Image (cartoon, rainbow, N blue to C red; front, top):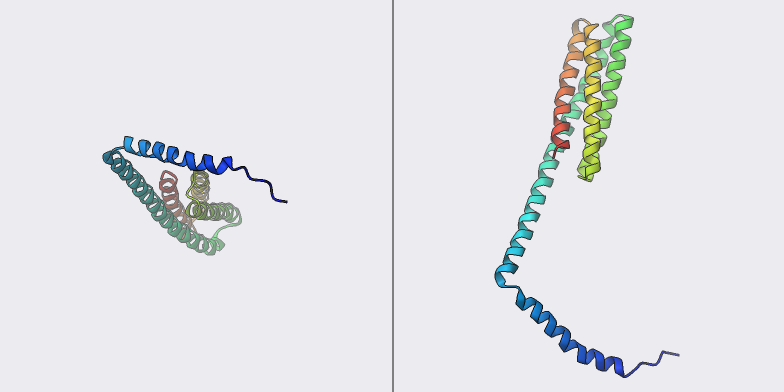
Length: 175
């Protein structure tokens, strides 16, 4: 059985509607056209700045992703050159290249996160990846000191590529 309705409710609604309309009209009348225009322009400017920041971050992330891909190619090249080293230098170089590969993989994951989210958490992931790339670079420099010939050149090229990647990660993290 439906609940009985009170005839007072519809009367209150009919009587209250003009009061609410009058209050709204008074509130809107208090705002000048200039105030409304200023608020609308500020909202447009804020949206434009946000769009620009997002576009800038996307461009920096794409640039860093290209560097990460190039670093991955350098890793593959370096691995091929390690065969010419003696066992001790080869072990150190392989460890450094493995660290470089892990840092590039983490950098790529952080870049994917930044591209998808663009949040403070992704900025921290980019900063962490940058630190890992710097550590891998230091390991490569140490391994390069014990390498010679094409292997040393390949490790040097990889170290340079990681430096560039680190710079791009820093730029993307700072956005």
